Amino acid sequence: MRVIGSDGSMLGVLSNREAIRVAQEQGMDLVELNPKAEPPVCKIMDFGKFKYEEKKRASEAKRKQTTVELKEVKLRPKTDDHDLNFKLRAARRFVETGNKVKFVVRFRGREIAHPDQAQGQLVWLLEHLEDIANADSRPAMEGRTMTVLVSPKPQVMQALSAQKTAQAESKRKALKEARAAQAVRTDGTTATSASGTPGATDASGTATDALDDDLDVDDEDLDDDEDLDGLDDLDDDDDDDDDDDDDDDEGDEDTDEETDQDAPVAGDGQPETT
Image (cartoon, rainbow, N blue to C red):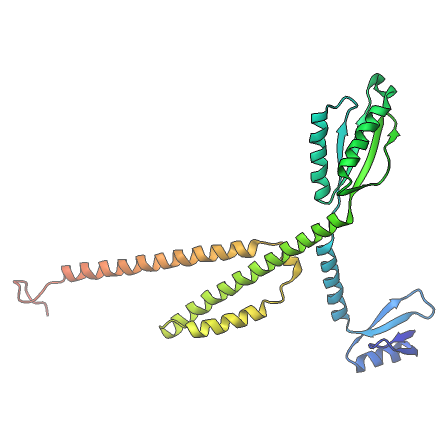
């Protein structure tokens, strides 16, 4: 097999046993890249790191990609001007969200004898969408329908991508702040229970370390807001626990008072028990 080193250098054609020995000496794996070549091509690499980087690249590509759908707007040759304006506003909304729009004019009966009216409607729509959309084709007949397809301009797609990136960054920042606040509350409670005094200094230092540890947030978790909801649930649970502790303390005080009242006192006419 033809072996490629971990630094990209060519090690030449080696036997299977020798190639495996070289990979083991470097503490890496021998990965087959092209089994159909003659001889097969292999590379010495850290396979775990390779899979991790491949997963990160796929996640980054998925985060940046924008799904394009095909929206259809139906018309008739007798569609009034007000309805045309309504259809135009709907088409602009579709295009601004990054979707393609297909205009379809259907003919019924003898309307097929006047295709110029439908063509005029489609041309009017294209003229009012030329600032945000490109016409993929001119109006053309397809059976008893006339259609035209428009797609968003690159500027629209770039704006959508930038908006999506900003939203993802905002979610990442909110998640970091929430985790840092939760770490401060947890560390403060632990320090108080251990020493009996509020551990503000230790909590702030530990919170900083927790924030540093959480800087590498996985992109696949950005779309998941369950962590933020979970933090609210933790706050509610802490408040309920505090209320239960207060109720227990009040119950103990009432029990002590009742015991003192019921106990006999020597010297007040009650016989002293020995």
